[in-house]
Length: 363
Image (tube, rainbow, N blue to C red; front, top):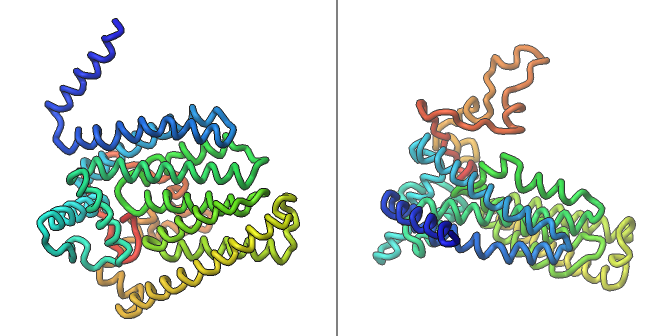
C-alpha cells in the first residue's frame, strides 16, 4: 500500500507524456518541480531568520496559489484570447530571439517588437535568453516570471516586519500573498512580474535601512533592485530613490528623532549617512536615464504623438468609463469599481485586443 501513491504519480506522469505537448511537460519537469522543491528549505530559512514558524506553513501555500493563478492567467491569454495579449507577443519574440541566436543570425530587430521602447524590448530579450536554456515554452516563461514575482511579494512582507516591528505581520503577509489581483494578474510573462519582483528588493532594502535598527546590507538589496527597475521602468526607480532620499534627509535633519536608539548611535548614523550617499549616486543615474527616456519621446514628437503612431487608445476598454457614465455627479465611474478588484474574463466569444502603447501596458 505504501507504493500506491508512487504508482499514481508514475501513471499520471506517463499520461502527461502521452497526451501533453513537449513544451508542457518539459516546463513542468524542469521549471515547476525543482523550484518548488528548492523553495521548501528556503521558506524554512526565512521562518527561522524572522523568528516566526508560521511563515514555513503559509509561504508554500502562497507559492502554490501563485502557480495556480499563473495557470489561470495562461488559460485566459492563450485559450480565451488566442495569445493576443502582451505575454503572447513576448513569447513569440523570445522564441525568435533564441532561434536567431542559435543560428548565429543577427538577433535585432525583432519584428513584433519594432516601434516599442527599449525597456519593452528588454523583456523580450530576457524571455529569449530563458528560451535558450529551456526551449521555446510559454509554460516555462509563465512559471519563471511567476516565481520572480512571488519572491518580490515575500520580500515586501519581510520588509514590513523589519521596518514596522509592532505591525500585524500575519495579516499583512496574507494580504500581500493572497490578494486576488496579485495572485492572478502579474503571474505571466511581462513587466508586471518583474515590477513586483525587483521592487521587492527595493522595499526590503529600504526597510532594512530605515528600520529602528538600521542594517547596511539593506543598501545592497536597494541598489540591486533599483538598477534592475531602471532597465524596465526608469521613472519608478527614480520615485523609489527619491523617496528614500527624502526619508534619509528628514532623519538627518531631524536628528533621528522618533526612531530607535540603535539608529541614533554613531554606528546607526554612519549607516544612514553612507546609505544617503549611495542614494544620491543612484539619483544621478536615475535622472540621467529618465532624461534620456523623455528625450527619446521628444524626438518622436512627444508622448501623445508616440501613442498616435500605435493607434489611439480605447479609454473605454482600459477604464470601463464612457462619456455618458458621468451624467450625474452621484454616479461613480465604472473604473473606480473595477480598479479595486479587476473583473475576470467570462468567455472568449468576443476577443478584445489590448491597444498597443509605446511606453507601458502589461508588456
